[in-house]
Image (tube, rainbow, N blue to C red; front, top):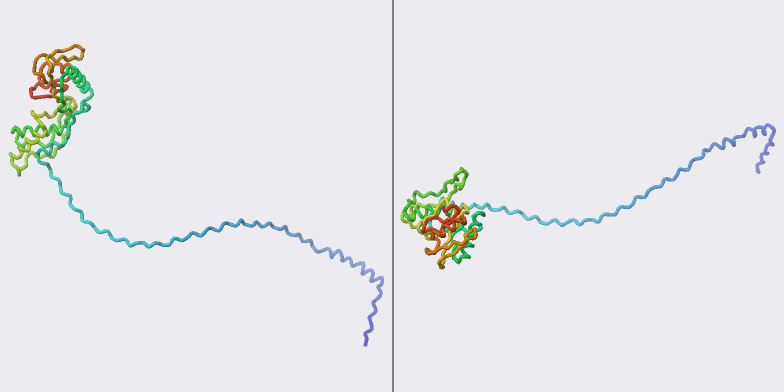
Length: 279
């Protein structure tokens, strides 16, 4: 059976009023406008360089330490308390024949006297200028023992202190490790050892201690000439004539000339010693 269509009602005036109340379209304006969010700029981080991998060193084999063997120290032989006297001592405490070892003021006087001798035609040979205190000490006592003037047992091995007249110290007290007296060789052996020292030193007479040589105020030299007279100039420019002999350093007229220059001769015929004081 075909359904009969329902007739559409005809709108009335009341219905029209109802349509007037449908001002609901204002209500349709209710949708709120949504603010589109501002897109946030995302900073892309700069890529950091990937570090190059470091090669891991291959571990080396650590050798096992071998324990060091303990060495037993060899005992050092104790040196003798003193060394026997004899010619070997002459090589110690060497002297000098250089005029540079003299004190300045005395050196100037020696140079002037030497120049006058040379210009006059005299010859000279230097024997000794500077002598260390220890050497002078050894020479003194070697001579005394060699000439039987002192028993070896009584000879000292220590230099005493020497003082000037004003009380100031001239020489310090110094130890010298020498044995003048050695039991195993007896007194005759001690004297012979001292004689060997005297010969090695070239001593012709006793040596002084203390000595002006150690202070730079003395010179030993041999002087001689052939002419007669010997005409030598003095410091003031005048000439001095030395007549006769002896024509060597033992001539007393030459001593007078040296004294004028400030270089004085030790008054001994066996000496070639000249100093600032004549001692």
